[in-house]
Image 1: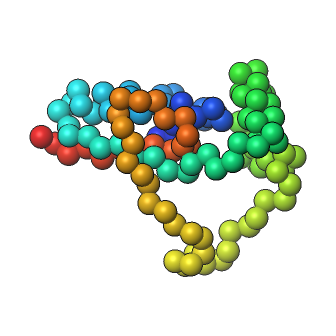
Image 2 (image 1 turned 180 degrees about the vertical axis):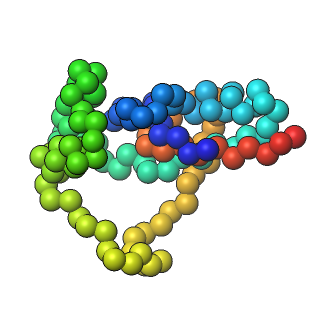
Length: 125
């Protein structure tokens, strides 16, 4: 599983998905189905400067007021307003296109608000 982390302060639910999990909920869900479960996180929140905090509060208010566009085109326009020009993807992605760091293990008993994405690996007992 690879859900968006609902404990992340910048979390914005997709209008086409109906259920999101915290790290503790994801762990409990799989443990309850008799899986040995390991949790991982990726896409760390890298900076928390004043600009980032203002954007985060503004985004959360827009999410709560249901002002986030439902279409990808609308979201793209909103991102351009806040972040400027978006970088296009290259025509071909290679190993050196971007730095890679693997997802990091996280504990199941603590909420994780420092990462945007969670991963769960479940092995049947």
